[in-house]
Image (tube, rainbow, N blue to C red):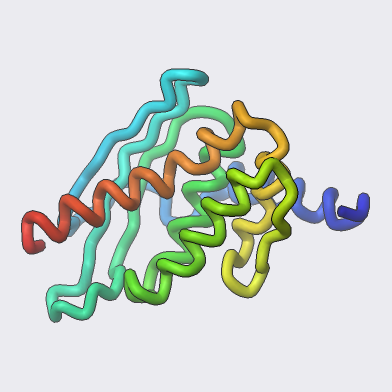
Length: 152
């Protein structure tokens, strides 16, 4: 990756950390989950609201994230990517992001799929950081399972 792109990606992470999108827990919500990364102490409480019409359109993702800049930025970027899309539309981005994060930097991210989240892929080279960056996605998955189970 060029130095220019690296600097741009760093700026995106800093921007999302300092001015997170969709932060703060909101109502209504179908499910609320709390995840903790015991390795570093990062935490996220995430609320998910799907459309009531059965379309599985993600109406809202709100969260309270505490921890490192990477995990807080990841929550902001993920929420922005999810809101307004259907679960089905989001699935390829989620799969690609997880695969890229587990590749130890060998897989380049698809910016069209990932949006700003592509800026987080540099963390894939640092196994301790992968959990920080994936934690919001794991919380989203858990909230989706819970929302579906509750029929909310």
